[in-house]
Amino acid sequence: MTVEDDLNWRVEQACREGWPAATETVVEGWLMRRSGGRIRRTNSVNPLRGNRAGPAEALASAETFYAGYGQIPLFRVPGVAGEMDAVLDQHGYAVEGGTIHLYADIDAMARVRDEKVVISATPGEDWFGARFRMSGYDDADRRILREMTGLIVGDRAFVSCEYDSEIAALAYGVIRDGLLVVESVETDARFRQQGLGRRTVGSLIDWARRAGATAACLQVVADNVPGRALYASLGFNRELYRYHYRRKAVAQ
Image 1 (cartoon, rainbow, N blue to C red):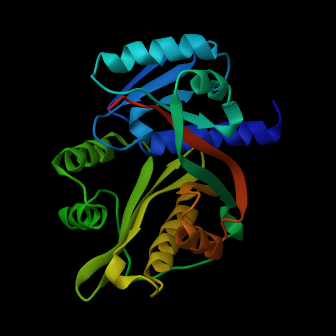
Image 2 (cartoon, rainbow, N blue to C red):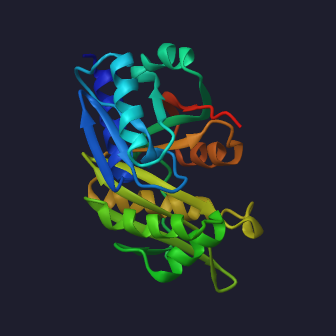
């Protein structure tokens, strides 16, 4: 395995651990994740590093696993392990949610420290309230997000930035295997284009640097142009690989 391959799989694992699922079952080198709700990452099949069962076997196992929960199977197909695409093409699984993995050495990133950005090891009710407001979560997704944050292992920080006495931007980060995983970056639509997202994520990176992280990574939807511009301004200048989801079309 090359150095590049090793980094890709380290990032793959760190990002997965940065947003844990309620149920995770390994079947012959494939990780079946389930939390319920609408969040794709925690309700999808993921390839694991090393030996894996073939695509046809993985498809059969996944369809059986998710049928037990009354869910439609969803596959997350990363560029580092794209063998599922061909068999999913044959079984009517459509492509959605193209996403990019970005990476940067932490010492090469912009140095931003804003004393007005609040940093906490646990999410408070104000953080949750702002996250729910910005994302339009329903009751099920609110419950799932609360449960998920309680499952996170490792050094973590929940950050927020206020504007007009309310949280206008937020994020959280987890350090796994020396990597800061940046997650849940949101800026209230009313307060965009004012640098609040940069102050918030920059302060998170500063926290991670002081906590001993050596690099940072994140996932951003490919067509999220403002988000990609924000991350580029902070030094996320290296694209590692991309992934997409495959969902089986359901007859109407």
